[in-house]
Image (cartoon, rainbow, N blue to C red; front, side, top):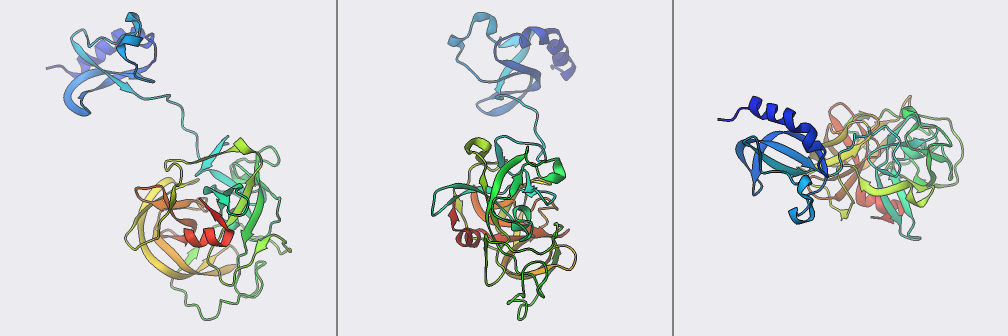
Length: 337
C-alpha cells in the first residue's frame, strides 16, 4: 500500500520538473478523483491554471499518468492570488469592503443599485456610514477604505454622497428634530450600534421620512470603473426576496467577512443607540442572530442560497443583528437592482 511519505518523496524529486511545465502552478498530495468522486488512492495532484486538451499541448508539457508508480491527477484552480483584507484599498471596489464618509471611521460598501429616474449606478450603504448620521451634504467625499482603515481624502475618494434618508432621533437630539414617532412605540430590544455621532448642521439633500424605517444612503461613484457590480462571496444581486421567520440569510461585510444566520423576528420596533445620548426608534425591522460586528454596518443581507437581497444591515449587539427590509430601502431611495 502506497504511503503518504512515498508520495512526498516522489513529489520532492519531481517538483522542479513539474513546475516547469506550461500552466502548472503547484504540486501536492491528494486523492485521485475520477468522475468527480474520490477513489481514496493517494496520488500526486498537479495544480494547473486551466485544463487544456492534450492535443493542444507539447509533449514536454503533458502530465504523465504516473510518476515512479505514483498516480497523478490534474486539478484546475485558476489564478491563485493572495486574498486582500476587507479593510484594504480595492480598485475596482466590490460590495463587502470598507467604506465611509470622510468624517467617520468605517462601515461596509453594501451593494450597487440603479437610480430609477436616471439609470445612474449608485453605491448603497447606511446613512451613518456615508452621511455621518445626517451631518453631511451632497457631494461630500466617500472614501474606500474608510478613514479608520487608512483611507485619506482626496487620494482614496471613491464616490460623492448623493442622497440619504434622514434619521429622526428621540427628543430632538442628533440633528433629527423632535421625533414624531417616539411616543406610542414600544421598545422590545435595546441595541448598541457603535457608530460616530456629530454636531448639528442643516442639510439640503436629506429625504425626510415620517417614521424611522431605514438607515440608508446613496453615493455616486467618482468614475465609471472605480466599482464592480459583485459582492464578495455573493456575486451579482439578481433581485429581492421577502424576509420570513426561519429563513437562512448571509452577509458580506468589512469586519466579519461572510457570515450566515437565521431570521428570528419580523416587524420589530426597536430603539437603536447612535453614540452618546442619541437614540432613534425604528419600526418594522428584521432581527437575526449575531451575524455582524461594528464596521459591518451597510452590508447587504441576502438569501442563504440565492443572490436575492433581503435587507440592509445597520445595527446589532453581541447576540442580535438588526436589518432594514430591502424593499422599503429601495422604495424610499427610488432605486432598484
